[in-house]
Length: 199
Image 1 (cartoon, helix red, strand yellow):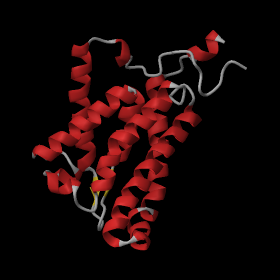
Image 2: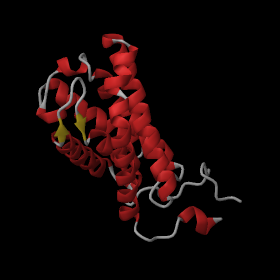
Image 3: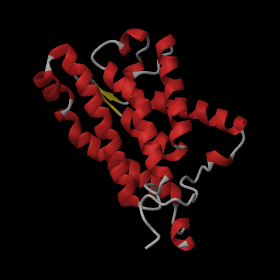
C-alpha cells in the first residue's frame, strides 16, 4: 500500500537524471531542449486563429523528462528566444507581437504546462507508470487549452473561442498525450519502478 501515485520517496523519475547533474550539463540540456521545442514549432497545420503544431507534445515531454523547474526554465528560454526575434515559434514565427495576439494565451501557458507535467512526473506520473504518464500529458494539454481559450475569449468572445480555440484541439491533444506517454515508456525501457522495489 506504500506504492501510491503521490509517493513521498524520490525515485529517479527520468532516464535523463538531469536533477543530479552539474549546472554545465543542465545548461546543455536547456539549449538542446529549446532546439527540440523550436523544431516542434515547424510541424504545423495552419488554422485560424490558432494553428495546430507539435508544440504541446514537446512542452509536455520536456516537462516530464526535465522536471518542473528545469522544464519551465527551458520552455521560458525558448519563448524568450522567440520574443527577441529568433524564428522558433509556430511555423518559424518570431517577435513579441505573437505574445499579444490570439495565440498569446497558449504561449504564456507553455511554461505552466511543462511545470505541471514535470511536477506530476516527479511524483510517479512518468514512464514507469504509462497510464499515469498519459493522464499527466492530458492534464498538461488541457491546462494549455483552457488558459489559451480564456485569453482568446477576451479577444473574440467565449463562444467563438471555444469553437475555434478549444474544440478543434481535443482529439489532437489526446493523440499527442498518447504519443508523449509512449515516448516516456520507450525512454524508461523495461526497468522496474524504483518506488515499487523500495516498498
